[in-house]
Image 1 (tube, rainbow, N blue to C red):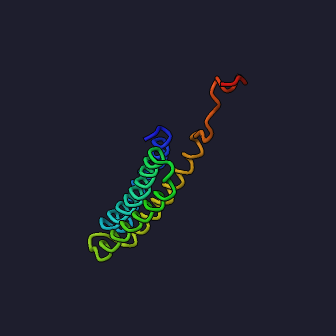
Image 2: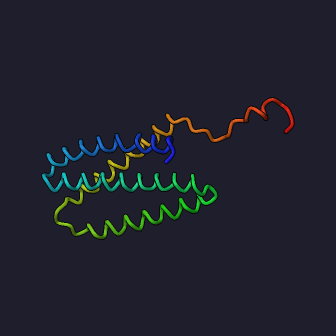
Image 3: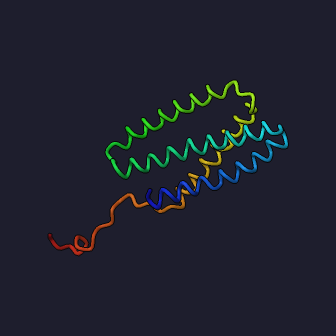
Length: 141
């Protein structure tokens, strides 16, 4: 993982973890233990979803830049399939509050995306290779 990718993941994961702790406490106060579990699991699902996608896209972009768009589509479709499977698995779960789970997913998503946007704005990523010293002198190779 490149240092820029790591800073972006950290810039999104840390605020999401803090928001997850706060949301879990609120869920426990409002809906009890199953509400706290639902919110915590929802925030965790959002963080794993976005974090996994960002890390895998960074890997593919560094290793095979020509396949970036196709890989992004494949990663996103795979994530949607896993998310569908998880939702089908948890739809009748009696140990968690479904409404709290949905709120946790929404809160985790909002905080992750805000943190990722903020981190992208703070990271100075070069998208053009600076000219080398030999070619900047004006001489011919």
